[in-house]
Image 1 (tube, rainbow, N blue to C red):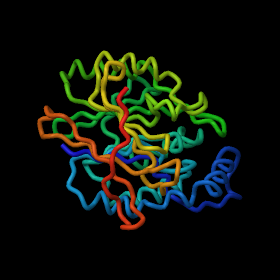
Image 2 (image 1 turned 90 degrees about the horizontal axis):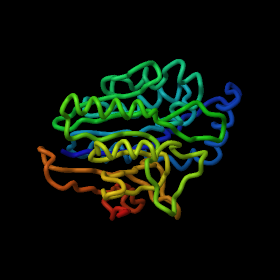
Image 3 (image 1 turned 90 degrees about the vertical axis):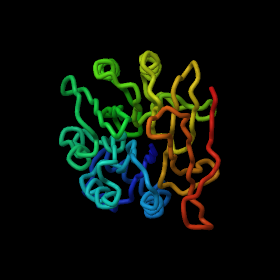
Length: 291
């Protein structure tokens, strides 16, 4: 089993600012002046992915910038070469940037066919399941409608409980969770209350009852891997931002997680980082945390 994890793609799409309002305008101006030129590695990223044999491609959100319909259209065109039965895609907070994007289901209309089967309890719950070979992928939507300059997340605990119930009822042993917001951060990269998963302690406590193999996320644009231990008994993998050019504070890229077909051997994680010298993604030592 070979899994590729990418996140926070923020594909550059030129919009007419005069046609935007309120939060969309603020977000687009912020993106245009601060981040537009930083997320330009998508061509090299897609070439790197297409050059490999793999079983699963996980995209953990923030494909767009302000969830504008045109952004979703462009993102679908860009990602089309790698969108097939192996892809598993969930939304990030930038894909749910406006109330309109929630109400009109922009993400679902564009990428819903790659998000797995819905296991919703009600209209508010988001629980997606997709099985690839011997592995079950669980997708959560941690994004909530927010005012400008806020990006915190929340996962309904009923969704977590329903996940565990489904796994137990279906006798599923091997599963991984994909959620945009982190469930854990390194000490030097702690998030503010305006940016973090607000109830991640409660979510973690529930997951300890039925630990996944790994928790894939994005949101913070710095790569890392946390190894399982008693406090967090599963891998935590952050591949954000996979399209961002590196700087002294952010050395971005993506991860590959691999194992044998039966999933009964230790997992190997490889980190891929863009090399300007070689104009391609190359293997580099992972940023690894152990508790």
